[in-house]
Length: 468
Image 1 (cartoon, rainbow, N blue to C red):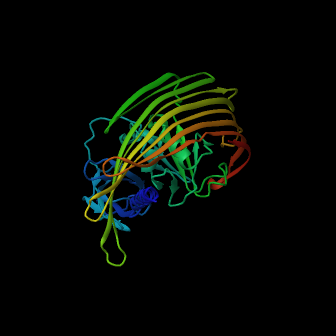
Image 2 (cartoon, rainbow, N blue to C red):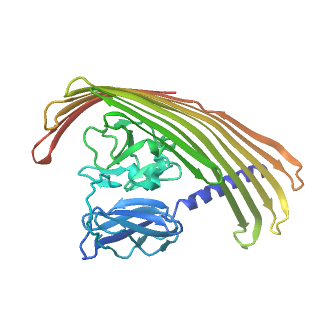
Image 3 (cartoon, rainbow, N blue to C red):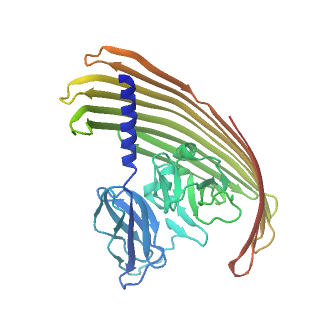
Protein backbone atom coordinates (compact mmCIF):
# COMPACT_ATOMS: atom_id res chain seq x y z
CA UNK A 1 0.00 0.00 0.00
CA UNK A 2 2.79 2.37 0.87
CA UNK A 3 4.64 1.87 -2.39
CA UNK A 4 1.41 2.34 -4.34
CA UNK A 5 0.81 5.58 -2.44
CA UNK A 6 4.34 6.73 -3.26
CA UNK A 7 3.82 6.09 -6.98
CA UNK A 8 0.47 7.86 -7.00
CA UNK A 9 1.88 10.84 -5.17
CA UNK A 10 4.81 11.07 -7.58
CA UNK A 11 2.54 10.98 -10.62
CA UNK A 12 0.12 13.46 -9.08
CA UNK A 13 2.83 15.92 -8.09
CA UNK A 14 4.54 15.73 -11.46
CA UNK A 15 1.23 16.24 -13.28
CA UNK A 16 0.35 19.19 -11.10
CA UNK A 17 3.74 20.75 -11.72
CA UNK A 18 3.52 20.32 -15.49
CA UNK A 19 -0.04 21.66 -15.55
CA UNK A 20 0.99 24.71 -13.61
CA UNK A 21 3.73 25.45 -16.11
CA UNK A 22 1.24 25.48 -18.99
CA UNK A 23 -1.13 28.09 -17.55
CA UNK A 24 -0.88 31.83 -17.31
CA UNK A 25 -0.12 32.63 -20.98
CA UNK A 26 -0.43 36.29 -21.95
CA UNK A 27 -1.25 38.11 -25.19
CA UNK A 28 0.79 41.24 -25.91
CA UNK A 29 -0.72 44.05 -28.00
CA UNK A 30 0.53 47.41 -29.27
CA UNK A 31 0.56 50.02 -32.05
CA UNK A 32 3.41 51.18 -34.28
CA UNK A 33 3.59 54.66 -35.90
CA UNK A 34 6.30 56.75 -37.49
CA UNK A 35 7.49 60.10 -36.20
CA UNK A 36 4.73 61.88 -38.12
CA UNK A 37 2.04 59.80 -36.37
CA UNK A 38 1.38 57.82 -39.56
CA UNK A 39 0.68 54.12 -39.18
CA UNK A 40 3.35 51.69 -40.33
CA UNK A 41 2.01 48.50 -41.88
CA UNK A 42 4.20 45.40 -42.20
CA UNK A 43 6.73 46.63 -39.61
CA UNK A 44 8.57 43.67 -38.10
CA UNK A 45 7.86 43.17 -34.40
CA UNK A 46 10.22 41.08 -32.26
CA UNK A 47 9.60 40.23 -28.61
CA UNK A 48 12.97 39.88 -26.86
CA UNK A 49 14.03 39.06 -23.33
CA UNK A 50 14.97 42.17 -21.36
CA UNK A 51 17.98 40.42 -19.85
CA UNK A 52 19.93 39.49 -22.99
CA UNK A 53 17.75 40.61 -25.97
CA UNK A 54 17.37 37.03 -27.19
CA UNK A 55 14.40 36.54 -29.51
CA UNK A 56 11.22 34.98 -28.13
CA UNK A 57 8.53 35.61 -30.76
CA UNK A 58 8.09 37.58 -33.97
CA UNK A 59 5.17 39.02 -35.92
CA UNK A 60 4.26 41.87 -38.29
CA UNK A 61 2.03 44.90 -37.87
CA UNK A 62 -1.23 45.04 -39.81
CA UNK A 63 -2.32 47.90 -42.11
CA UNK A 64 -3.38 49.95 -39.08
CA UNK A 65 -0.03 49.46 -37.34
CA UNK A 66 -1.51 47.10 -34.72
CA UNK A 67 0.22 43.90 -33.64
CA UNK A 68 -0.58 40.89 -31.45
CA UNK A 69 1.86 38.42 -29.87
CA UNK A 70 0.09 35.40 -28.36
CA UNK A 71 0.91 32.82 -25.69
CA UNK A 72 3.77 34.47 -23.80
CA UNK A 73 4.86 33.13 -20.40
CA UNK A 74 5.98 35.04 -17.32
CA UNK A 75 9.19 37.07 -17.50
CA UNK A 76 10.74 40.43 -18.35
CA UNK A 77 10.57 41.52 -21.99
CA UNK A 78 11.00 44.33 -24.49
CA UNK A 79 9.51 44.88 -27.95
CA UNK A 80 11.91 45.66 -30.81
CA UNK A 81 10.52 47.18 -34.02
CA UNK A 82 12.19 47.51 -37.44
CA UNK A 83 10.82 48.93 -40.71
CA UNK A 84 12.35 49.87 -44.04
CA UNK A 85 13.56 53.48 -44.05
CA UNK A 86 13.26 53.88 -40.27
CA UNK A 87 15.55 53.57 -37.29
CA UNK A 88 15.23 50.55 -35.03
CA UNK A 89 13.16 51.24 -31.89
CA UNK A 90 12.61 49.51 -28.55
CA UNK A 91 9.84 49.68 -25.99
CA UNK A 92 10.57 50.17 -22.31
CA UNK A 93 11.14 46.89 -20.42
CA UNK A 94 7.97 45.36 -18.96
CA UNK A 95 7.06 42.31 -16.90
CA UNK A 96 4.48 39.60 -17.53
CA UNK A 97 3.00 38.02 -14.42
CA UNK A 98 1.15 34.72 -14.08
CA UNK A 99 -2.56 34.69 -15.01
CA UNK A 100 -2.22 38.06 -16.77
CA UNK A 101 -4.54 37.82 -19.78
CA UNK A 102 -3.20 40.75 -21.83
CA UNK A 103 -0.51 43.40 -21.72
CA UNK A 104 -0.73 46.58 -23.78
CA UNK A 105 2.62 48.04 -24.79
CA UNK A 106 2.63 51.85 -25.05
CA UNK A 107 2.79 53.40 -28.54
CA UNK A 108 6.16 52.95 -30.26
CA UNK A 109 7.23 55.64 -32.74
CA UNK A 110 9.86 55.00 -35.40
CA UNK A 111 11.99 57.89 -36.58
CA UNK A 112 12.84 58.13 -40.30
CA UNK A 113 16.39 57.11 -41.11
CA UNK A 114 18.24 60.06 -42.64
CA UNK A 115 21.61 59.52 -44.30
CA UNK A 116 23.72 61.74 -46.54
CA UNK A 117 24.11 60.31 -50.03
CA UNK A 118 27.80 59.79 -50.89
CA UNK A 119 27.51 56.87 -53.24
CA UNK A 120 24.99 54.33 -54.48
CA UNK A 121 25.33 50.63 -53.73
CA UNK A 122 22.46 48.33 -54.64
CA UNK A 123 22.14 45.44 -52.18
CA UNK A 124 19.43 42.79 -52.44
CA UNK A 125 18.30 41.48 -49.06
CA UNK A 126 15.08 39.68 -48.26
CA UNK A 127 13.11 40.92 -45.25
CA UNK A 128 12.65 38.51 -42.36
CA UNK A 129 8.86 38.46 -42.77
CA UNK A 130 6.90 39.04 -46.00
CA UNK A 131 3.13 39.46 -46.06
CA UNK A 132 1.64 38.15 -49.32
CA UNK A 133 -1.96 37.86 -50.49
CA UNK A 134 -2.57 34.27 -49.35
CA UNK A 135 0.31 33.60 -46.98
CA UNK A 136 2.95 34.97 -44.66
CA UNK A 137 6.54 34.07 -45.56
CA UNK A 138 9.37 33.82 -43.02
CA UNK A 139 12.84 34.05 -44.62
CA UNK A 140 14.87 31.98 -42.18
CA UNK A 141 18.36 33.28 -42.99
CA UNK A 142 17.25 36.92 -42.69
CA UNK A 143 17.40 36.69 -38.88
CA UNK A 144 20.64 35.94 -37.06
CA UNK A 145 18.63 34.54 -34.14
CA UNK A 146 17.87 31.42 -36.22
CA UNK A 147 21.53 30.38 -36.51
CA UNK A 148 22.22 27.07 -34.77
CA UNK A 149 18.57 26.33 -34.00
CA UNK A 150 16.17 23.62 -35.14
CA UNK A 151 13.17 23.88 -37.44
CA UNK A 152 10.89 23.51 -34.41
CA UNK A 153 12.56 26.45 -32.66
CA UNK A 154 12.18 28.60 -35.79
CA UNK A 155 8.48 27.75 -35.88
CA UNK A 156 8.09 28.68 -32.20
CA UNK A 157 9.31 32.22 -32.96
CA UNK A 158 7.25 32.62 -36.15
CA UNK A 159 4.09 34.78 -36.26
CA UNK A 160 0.86 33.13 -35.13
CA UNK A 161 2.47 29.74 -34.38
CA UNK A 162 2.39 28.18 -30.92
CA UNK A 163 4.22 25.02 -29.88
CA UNK A 164 3.36 23.48 -26.51
CA UNK A 165 5.73 21.44 -24.34
CA UNK A 166 4.57 18.19 -26.01
CA UNK A 167 5.42 19.51 -29.49
CA UNK A 168 1.81 20.07 -30.63
CA UNK A 169 1.62 22.91 -33.17
CA UNK A 170 -1.27 25.35 -33.40
CA UNK A 171 -1.83 28.30 -35.74
CA UNK A 172 -3.81 31.32 -34.53
CA UNK A 173 -4.96 29.22 -31.58
CA UNK A 174 -6.26 26.36 -33.76
CA UNK A 175 -4.90 22.82 -33.47
CA UNK A 176 -4.76 20.34 -36.35
CA UNK A 177 -2.24 22.25 -38.47
CA UNK A 178 -0.78 20.31 -41.40
CA UNK A 179 2.97 20.62 -41.89
CA UNK A 180 4.46 20.26 -45.37
CA UNK A 181 8.11 20.05 -46.41
CA UNK A 182 8.84 21.35 -49.91
CA UNK A 183 5.14 21.19 -50.76
CA UNK A 184 4.70 17.58 -49.66
CA UNK A 185 2.89 16.48 -46.46
CA UNK A 186 4.85 14.85 -43.64
CA UNK A 187 1.86 12.64 -42.62
CA UNK A 188 2.98 13.05 -39.00
CA UNK A 189 1.46 14.75 -35.98
CA UNK A 190 2.10 15.23 -32.27
CA UNK A 191 5.32 13.86 -30.83
CA UNK A 192 6.43 12.25 -34.13
CA UNK A 193 6.15 15.54 -36.01
CA UNK A 194 7.94 17.41 -33.21
CA UNK A 195 10.74 14.84 -33.33
CA UNK A 196 11.11 15.32 -37.10
CA UNK A 197 11.26 19.13 -36.84
CA UNK A 198 13.52 19.08 -33.79
CA UNK A 199 16.05 17.13 -35.86
CA UNK A 200 16.01 19.51 -38.85
CA UNK A 201 18.68 22.18 -38.60
CA UNK A 202 17.74 25.76 -39.49
CA UNK A 203 20.79 25.74 -41.80
CA UNK A 204 18.79 23.54 -44.19
CA UNK A 205 15.79 25.89 -44.34
CA UNK A 206 15.08 28.62 -46.87
CA UNK A 207 11.54 29.79 -46.09
CA UNK A 208 8.51 28.98 -43.96
CA UNK A 209 5.13 29.66 -45.57
CA UNK A 210 2.25 30.19 -43.11
CA UNK A 211 -1.23 29.88 -44.65
CA UNK A 212 -4.40 30.28 -42.59
CA UNK A 213 -6.51 29.95 -45.77
CA UNK A 214 -4.46 27.63 -48.00
CA UNK A 215 -4.98 27.34 -51.78
CA UNK A 216 -6.91 24.42 -53.28
CA UNK A 217 -3.72 22.50 -54.09
CA UNK A 218 -3.29 21.64 -50.41
CA UNK A 219 -5.27 18.99 -48.53
CA UNK A 220 -8.73 20.01 -47.34
CA UNK A 221 -7.90 18.33 -44.01
CA UNK A 222 -5.76 21.33 -43.08
CA UNK A 223 -8.74 23.36 -41.84
CA UNK A 224 -6.60 24.94 -39.12
CA UNK A 225 -4.00 26.05 -41.66
CA UNK A 226 -0.94 24.90 -43.54
CA UNK A 227 2.74 25.38 -42.71
CA UNK A 228 5.03 24.69 -45.66
CA UNK A 229 8.75 24.43 -44.86
CA UNK A 230 10.90 25.06 -47.94
CA UNK A 231 14.46 23.80 -47.90
CA UNK A 232 17.37 25.38 -49.75
CA UNK A 233 17.84 24.97 -53.50
CA UNK A 234 19.81 27.66 -55.28
CA UNK A 235 19.18 28.86 -58.86
CA UNK A 236 22.71 30.12 -59.43
CA UNK A 237 24.37 28.88 -62.61
CA UNK A 238 27.50 26.75 -62.20
CA UNK A 239 28.90 25.38 -58.95
CA UNK A 240 27.82 26.83 -55.63
CA UNK A 241 27.82 25.64 -52.05
CA UNK A 242 28.21 26.51 -48.43
CA UNK A 243 29.51 24.99 -45.22
CA UNK A 244 28.20 26.13 -41.86
CA UNK A 245 28.84 25.15 -38.26
CA UNK A 246 27.52 26.34 -34.93
CA UNK A 247 28.16 25.64 -31.26
CA UNK A 248 25.65 26.22 -28.48
CA UNK A 249 26.96 25.81 -24.96
CA UNK A 250 24.58 25.15 -22.11
CA UNK A 251 25.27 22.62 -19.40
CA UNK A 252 26.34 20.36 -22.26
CA UNK A 253 27.66 21.29 -25.70
CA UNK A 254 25.32 21.19 -28.71
CA UNK A 255 27.30 21.47 -31.97
CA UNK A 256 25.77 21.29 -35.45
CA UNK A 257 27.07 21.54 -39.01
CA UNK A 258 25.76 21.35 -42.56
CA UNK A 259 26.97 21.22 -46.17
CA UNK A 260 24.96 22.56 -49.12
CA UNK A 261 26.05 21.98 -52.72
CA UNK A 262 24.41 22.87 -56.02
CA UNK A 263 25.40 22.44 -59.67
CA UNK A 264 23.33 24.04 -62.43
CA UNK A 265 24.28 24.04 -66.10
CA UNK A 266 22.18 24.08 -69.26
CA UNK A 267 19.23 21.73 -68.65
CA UNK A 268 20.53 20.04 -65.48
CA UNK A 269 20.33 21.14 -61.85
CA UNK A 270 21.77 18.89 -59.13
CA UNK A 271 21.44 19.77 -55.46
CA UNK A 272 22.40 18.08 -52.20
CA UNK A 273 22.46 18.76 -48.48
CA UNK A 274 24.12 16.92 -45.61
CA UNK A 275 23.62 17.89 -41.98
CA UNK A 276 24.74 16.75 -38.53
CA UNK A 277 23.03 17.95 -35.38
CA UNK A 278 23.33 17.08 -31.69
CA UNK A 279 21.13 17.93 -28.74
CA UNK A 280 22.12 17.43 -25.11
CA UNK A 281 19.55 18.69 -22.66
CA UNK A 282 19.40 18.61 -18.85
CA UNK A 283 16.47 19.45 -16.58
CA UNK A 284 16.13 19.39 -12.80
CA UNK A 285 12.68 19.23 -11.25
CA UNK A 286 12.21 19.84 -7.52
CA UNK A 287 8.82 19.32 -5.84
CA UNK A 288 8.03 20.00 -2.19
CA UNK A 289 4.51 19.32 -0.96
CA UNK A 290 2.75 19.28 2.38
CA UNK A 291 -0.37 17.14 2.80
CA UNK A 292 -2.86 18.56 5.31
CA UNK A 293 -5.86 17.23 7.17
CA UNK A 294 -9.12 18.53 5.66
CA UNK A 295 -10.63 19.30 9.05
CA UNK A 296 -7.77 20.49 11.24
CA UNK A 297 -5.59 21.86 8.42
CA UNK A 298 -2.59 20.35 10.21
CA UNK A 299 0.28 18.86 8.23
CA UNK A 300 -0.09 15.09 7.89
CA UNK A 301 3.04 14.33 5.86
CA UNK A 302 5.81 15.96 3.83
CA UNK A 303 6.72 14.92 0.31
CA UNK A 304 10.00 15.92 -1.36
CA UNK A 305 11.01 14.87 -4.87
CA UNK A 306 14.06 15.70 -6.97
CA UNK A 307 14.23 14.50 -10.59
CA UNK A 308 17.24 14.90 -12.87
CA UNK A 309 16.49 14.37 -16.56
CA UNK A 310 19.03 13.98 -19.34
CA UNK A 311 17.96 13.86 -22.99
CA UNK A 312 20.54 13.53 -25.75
CA UNK A 313 20.34 12.56 -29.40
CA UNK A 314 22.19 12.96 -32.69
CA UNK A 315 20.83 13.44 -36.18
CA UNK A 316 22.44 12.75 -39.53
CA UNK A 317 20.36 13.94 -42.49
CA UNK A 318 20.93 13.97 -46.24
CA UNK A 319 19.10 15.05 -49.40
CA UNK A 320 19.95 14.56 -53.08
CA UNK A 321 17.92 15.77 -56.04
CA UNK A 322 18.04 16.65 -59.71
CA UNK A 323 15.89 18.71 -62.08
CA UNK A 324 16.07 18.20 -65.85
CA UNK A 325 14.53 20.68 -68.28
CA UNK A 326 13.10 18.63 -71.12
CA UNK A 327 12.07 21.85 -72.84
CA UNK A 328 11.50 25.47 -71.93
CA UNK A 329 8.06 24.54 -70.62
CA UNK A 330 8.57 21.07 -69.11
CA UNK A 331 10.77 20.02 -66.18
CA UNK A 332 11.26 16.54 -64.70
CA UNK A 333 12.89 15.91 -61.35
CA UNK A 334 13.52 13.57 -58.47
CA UNK A 335 14.47 13.96 -54.80
CA UNK A 336 15.62 11.39 -52.23
CA UNK A 337 16.16 12.24 -48.59
CA UNK A 338 16.46 10.65 -45.20
CA UNK A 339 17.80 10.91 -41.71
CA UNK A 340 18.99 8.73 -38.81
CA UNK A 341 18.25 9.81 -35.24
CA UNK A 342 19.48 7.71 -32.28
CA UNK A 343 18.96 9.06 -28.77
CA UNK A 344 18.74 8.32 -25.06
CA UNK A 345 16.56 9.68 -22.27
CA UNK A 346 17.29 9.14 -18.57
CA UNK A 347 15.27 10.30 -15.57
CA UNK A 348 16.56 9.66 -12.04
CA UNK A 349 14.09 10.59 -9.31
CA UNK A 350 14.47 10.49 -5.52
CA UNK A 351 11.34 10.72 -3.36
CA UNK A 352 11.41 11.27 0.42
CA UNK A 353 8.28 10.97 2.58
CA UNK A 354 8.43 12.34 6.14
CA UNK A 355 6.01 12.88 9.03
CA UNK A 356 4.85 16.36 10.18
CA UNK A 357 8.05 16.85 12.19
CA UNK A 358 10.03 15.95 9.01
CA UNK A 359 11.25 12.65 10.44
CA UNK A 360 12.03 10.50 7.42
CA UNK A 361 9.61 7.58 6.90
CA UNK A 362 10.56 6.10 3.52
CA UNK A 363 12.57 6.57 0.35
CA UNK A 364 11.82 5.74 -3.26
CA UNK A 365 14.36 5.75 -6.08
CA UNK A 366 12.96 5.67 -9.63
CA UNK A 367 15.05 5.29 -12.78
CA UNK A 368 13.52 5.65 -16.22
CA UNK A 369 15.49 5.06 -19.42
CA UNK A 370 14.46 5.17 -23.06
CA UNK A 371 16.83 4.14 -25.86
CA UNK A 372 15.25 5.21 -29.12
CA UNK A 373 16.05 5.27 -32.81
CA UNK A 374 14.07 7.08 -35.50
CA UNK A 375 14.82 6.67 -39.21
CA UNK A 376 13.23 8.19 -42.27
CA UNK A 377 13.56 7.72 -46.03
CA UNK A 378 11.65 9.57 -48.72
CA UNK A 379 11.64 9.63 -52.52
CA UNK A 380 9.82 11.86 -55.00
CA UNK A 381 9.43 11.98 -58.77
CA UNK A 382 7.89 15.14 -60.14
CA UNK A 383 6.89 16.88 -63.38
CA UNK A 384 5.98 20.50 -64.09
CA UNK A 385 4.63 21.82 -67.39
CA UNK A 386 3.93 25.50 -68.08
CA UNK A 387 1.38 26.08 -70.85
CA UNK A 388 1.73 29.81 -71.45
CA UNK A 389 3.31 33.03 -70.24
CA UNK A 390 0.39 33.80 -67.88
CA UNK A 391 1.45 31.01 -65.51
CA UNK A 392 -0.99 28.25 -66.44
CA UNK A 393 0.68 25.05 -65.27
CA UNK A 394 0.21 21.36 -64.56
CA UNK A 395 2.24 19.52 -61.89
CA UNK A 396 2.48 15.85 -60.95
CA UNK A 397 4.15 14.23 -57.92
CA UNK A 398 4.66 10.59 -56.97
CA UNK A 399 5.97 10.11 -53.41
CA UNK A 400 7.14 7.42 -51.04
CA UNK A 401 7.80 8.18 -47.36
CA UNK A 402 8.93 5.62 -44.79
CA UNK A 403 9.40 6.03 -41.05
CA UNK A 404 10.96 3.36 -38.84
CA UNK A 405 11.27 3.83 -35.09
CA UNK A 406 12.05 1.83 -31.98
CA UNK A 407 11.73 2.65 -28.27
CA UNK A 408 13.34 0.42 -25.64
CA UNK A 409 11.92 1.64 -22.31
CA UNK A 410 12.72 0.66 -18.73
CA UNK A 411 11.20 1.83 -15.45
CA UNK A 412 12.56 0.59 -12.12
CA UNK A 413 11.22 1.72 -8.73
CA UNK A 414 13.13 0.72 -5.59
CA UNK A 415 11.76 1.19 -2.05
CA UNK A 416 13.77 1.73 1.15
CA UNK A 417 13.30 2.61 4.79
CA UNK A 418 15.05 5.66 6.35
CA UNK A 419 18.20 3.56 6.80
CA UNK A 420 18.42 2.48 3.15
CA UNK A 421 17.19 -1.06 3.84
CA UNK A 422 14.95 -2.45 1.08
CA UNK A 423 11.31 -2.67 2.17
CA UNK A 424 9.65 -4.07 -0.95
CA UNK A 425 10.67 -5.91 -4.06
CA UNK A 426 11.53 -3.36 -6.79
CA UNK A 427 8.93 -2.75 -9.46
CA UNK A 428 10.23 -3.24 -13.00
CA UNK A 429 8.40 -2.25 -16.17
CA UNK A 430 9.94 -3.06 -19.56
CA UNK A 431 8.65 -1.94 -22.93
CA UNK A 432 9.70 -2.36 -26.55
CA UNK A 433 7.64 -0.11 -28.83
CA UNK A 434 8.47 -0.46 -32.54
CA UNK A 435 6.84 1.78 -35.13
CA UNK A 436 6.79 1.44 -38.89
CA UNK A 437 4.95 3.75 -41.31
CA UNK A 438 4.97 3.50 -45.11
CA UNK A 439 3.17 6.03 -47.30
CA UNK A 440 2.64 5.97 -51.06
CA UNK A 441 0.92 8.90 -52.75
CA UNK A 442 0.29 10.50 -56.13
CA UNK A 443 -1.16 13.93 -56.86
CA UNK A 444 -1.68 16.21 -59.84
CA UNK A 445 -2.58 19.92 -59.72
CA UNK A 446 -3.71 22.34 -62.38
CA UNK A 447 -3.55 26.11 -61.94
CA UNK A 448 -4.72 28.88 -64.29
CA UNK A 449 -4.57 32.62 -63.49
CA UNK A 450 -7.73 34.57 -64.33
CA UNK A 451 -8.55 38.25 -64.64
CA UNK A 452 -8.45 40.67 -61.72
CA UNK A 453 -6.04 38.52 -59.72
CA UNK A 454 -8.36 35.50 -59.54
CA UNK A 455 -7.05 31.99 -60.04
CA UNK A 456 -8.64 28.65 -61.00
CA UNK A 457 -7.15 25.61 -59.29
CA UNK A 458 -8.06 21.92 -59.45
CA UNK A 459 -6.34 18.68 -58.56
CA UNK A 460 -6.55 15.00 -57.72
CA UNK A 461 -4.77 12.94 -55.08
CA UNK A 462 -4.61 9.33 -53.98
CA UNK A 463 -2.58 7.77 -51.17
CA UNK A 464 -1.99 4.46 -49.40
CA UNK A 465 -0.74 4.34 -45.82
CA UNK A 466 0.53 1.24 -44.02
CA UNK A 467 1.30 1.38 -40.30
CA UNK A 468 2.60 -1.24 -37.89
